[in-house]
Length: 137
Image 1: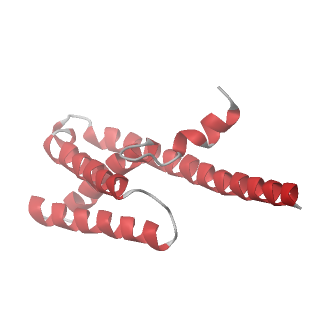
Image 2 (image 1 turned 180 degrees about the vertical axis):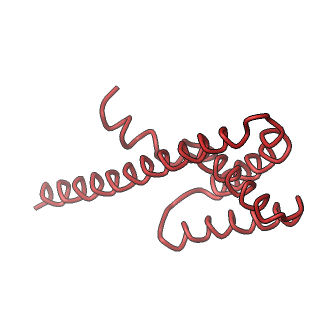
């Protein structure tokens, strides 16, 4: 496979789920840990997390990130799954604090790689647009 696939194309938004879905799942786990740290009840934490997830999707829309409505919905769904996975499974593991640290590090790495891919895709698309314009002249 070519370099563009691993750097850019693997991060492209799909109709329902994509590589960003992993980050939304991990983000749900992180939000669960945050709400747990503030001693919020399950329902208060879940409601707060869902509002934050919805807010993030609105932010993406405001800054011009184009995704299908299905993708936005599944992003929130993956976040909720991450939240529930943490509350009902991960927190009960003996070494959950260490697992959480690994999850947080993976989340940061994937966010940085995804952002890099996004910037490279914009740069590539601008270059292609300039190439197409120069061919018309």
